[in-house]
Image (cartoon, rainbow, N blue to C red; front, side, top):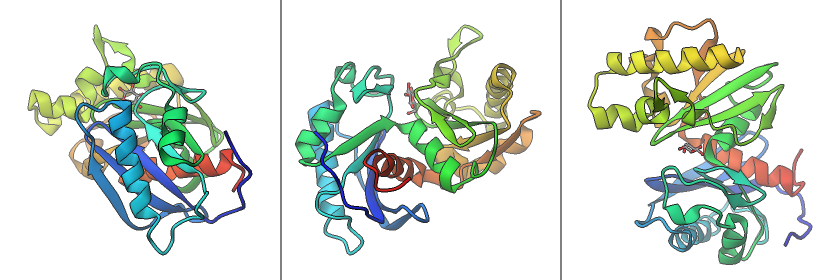
Length: 264
Ligand code: BGC
């Protein structure tokens, strides 16, 4: 159920990942996370109930801080799966019990406040389009997050086209994220140069399919771009996420604020 909210300048964003759940207070004007992020490892097994409890713990901690939003402000939550109408339709790197779970309802009940749930890469894309490397870029911007899996956000003229799952493109007989994600590099214990070859194959293919104006690489690995970015030969400009690891938190908060009409 959703109530009318008064306007606000900060909103809490929570980014749920395969290894950690991070939260922060987001300044909607600047897109900055105010103060430290608060992180708790993702529980194992990462069932909806266990994850919801951790999210509540993070929200409770953030609400004690000086920049905390109003008591009834909505919370933006990002999740590593396809999210349509508040329902999770996939579970590539999380517990299978999330498939068809009503994530909106689970988090609304646990937190006792309105929530807006979205795909994690979509959130990162939204944040980059509004505040970061994709700001004011016309045409197609593809944000590709390299982490446990590969996430993707499709932005056109600043607007997000949600739930585009380019991490699961089938390439050379493999689901792309099983070869080109950051975790695949670690699992296969390959050098950065070998990893760059995999990224080249992946990005060339995505470039051929969509001819974007810009690629933005997100995820933890965006901090190490000097190890693989110079090796990539593409006609499309490619850069790393300006909001780094905060993009998910910021995009989640922004989407909640837009959905509940706290900002445009
Ligand atoms: C999931 C996506 C998610 C990405 C990054 C993929 O395996 O299918 O929904 O955005 O991982 O977490």
